[in-house]
Amino acid sequence: MPKKVMVATDKPFAASAVVQIEKLCKDGGYEFILLEKYGDQSKFVEAVKDVDALIVRSDNVTKEVIENANNLKIVVRAGAGFDNLDCTAASAKKVVCMNTPGQNSNAVAELAIGMMIYMARGQFNGKSGTELKGKTLGIHAYGNVGVNVARIAKGFEMKILAFDPYVDKAVMEKDGVEAVDSVEELYNVCDYISLHLPSIPATQKFVNKTLLSIMKKGATVINTARKEVVCEDGLLFVLGARTDLKYASDIAPDKKDEMLEKLGDRVYFTPKKMGAQTAEANLNAGVAAMKQIIDFFEKGDTKFQVNK
Ligand code: 3PG
Image (cartoon, rainbow, N blue to C red; front, side, top):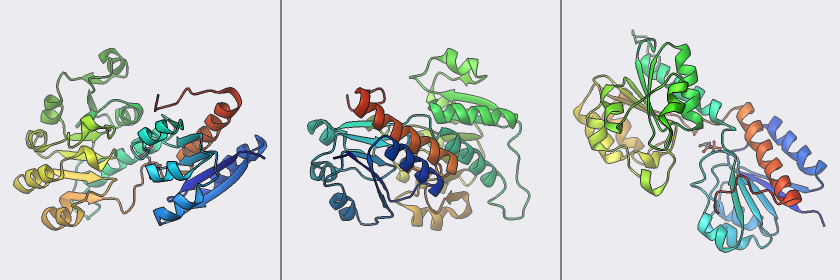
């Protein structure tokens, strides 16, 4: 009996990416199962019953999913953030969890820059806006996406600063990025702040009232990371008090309606999470996930395991 690999994506990959993933899967001698746009979580829970491997995006791989998947050995999150995987439940069942770091970062970085332009041009409202050239960009967390944002922003002739206590300053400086010593400095001097923090316990509501309130006059925060890293009450308070500030996010906040009502066109939210929604990113991340599954089954390779 061939092992079963399921691609479970409520938000589907581009069809061209699915074709490649399926080919790789079948060429490797595995059975390919596709579960797209399942909508209701119960359908996902039900579908995983006898799968050996799972490829997901932001799909919620909950304890229930893991416990219902009796044959499951590996889950690969085709993407960077794995906050949607219950790694504790997976570890308890000896299920290996992986991500595919870097595979969709250019797509997310391009969207972050696009959102900066969109906000600089007043959401294309026909009035005079501003340019990115000559402005200061602050990259909050210098991982794969942050690196790509810096690379693109250089072409716009922006001055680039970054804060990341986990990255060697020499790495940033080699990229032509000025490493600042404190997160406060970043928020205090930049015209744009681009968020790239992972959603982990230490980063919950990290971008809070205090940080937002020290922002430079006229600054804009761009969030292509996670809604959880921003304190929504703090954001509502500070943007309510300071009408010069703006916020744009690729992840709708819980208080989206209240923000739109109170802050109007100083805030913008994409209708659906769009960061990694490119054919290229889908292909890179999806194919990488499939290859990692094959390498795991064939060679015991656990290089990208995140629940060690
Ligand atoms: C990631 O963590 O890789 C991004 O947030 C992309 O998420 P998505 O695959 O759900 O679009």
